[in-house]
Image (tube, rainbow, N blue to C red; front, side, top):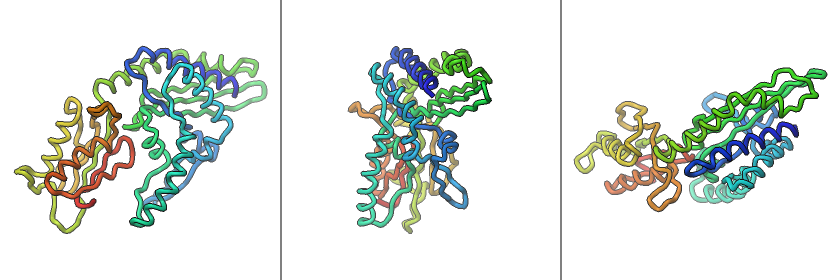
Length: 317
């Protein structure tokens, strides 16, 4: 494991050095990937609509010595270079305290709560630009060993893979340092991995973050539909034009066709910062649309639960 940690430190140092030339370094958060958590038994199983849902149990995963050593190695390298890094474990501890307060408040007020998961909560509170998901597994065969590793950079807003990298040492003698074996298999794609990160970061600066938007009309008996007119325009057109006017270079796609009670958009490019220089996420951006509804006397609720998914319900507040 020590040699694997050395490799991780070297790779992190390489990424940081190359990216230092970029206009603005992203804020990163390190978490174990789902495959590693599943292999170690650090998972939580739930059921929704008859389907089994498997989530990472970060409370257990962050206590794993191997993961703690790997993440500590990365943190040390990044701290030396002044690279912004979110401490996911510390954030999770803070979330536990906040959750206890939220449960008491929500129970007293309404008895209901919005469903979220640990990963979305980490992202929403820590607001990293990119999440590095790390995993590895190895086997020993007498005097031989092999190690597979994977590191995936994931956009924390769109949840799209930015720059995955994986390698397999094949069977090598145990006398060969693990770091040497991995470097031999990784050197062919490491440069491309780093270059892809830089290109992606630069694209965010120019074209903005990518999010999703869902607008739904609740059946409250008021007869509101996307065809209802306000200020001489149909509600559906008001939403469409607002999205167009408030995206960078009008970049977005409408996911669903014309429906009476719902509009859905994806690949929505929003500014990384608001006019005051504060970081922009999906929920904060969607507040602008909610204010438009308010100007027409429409009640609405911003129910966004993650960095990259904006959800507005019309007909309830």
